[in-house]
Image 1 (tube, rainbow, N blue to C red):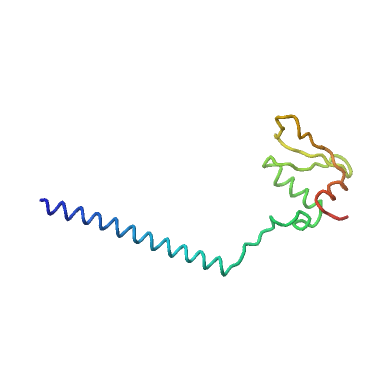
Image 2: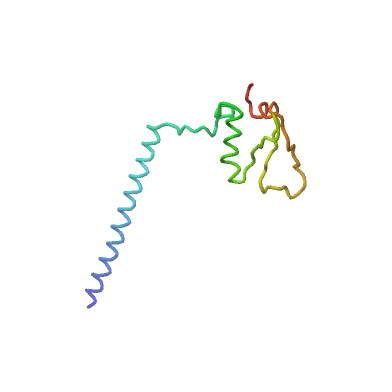
Length: 119
């Protein structure tokens, strides 16, 4: 009976060892494949690093994007309250310290200058 128990224990240990070796080989292969893919693909190209005036063709396009995607996510966006006058909409954000009271209304020219757009 001791031999059966020893055989079962060594079989279990062997299965664990085989499983660990297999996992290590898989991880090494995946790591090398990832490095090779990264080397051949080059850097990932995203627009996030570009200035706003290069990501959008015009101020109107950028403001529309802010309203469509920023407003639902409670991010700041600008609402046109008059011809060429925009009000900053900050959602539920209110500074606790009372400081940071920022300008709330902007002219079109101010926004163009702020975001780097030309007329």
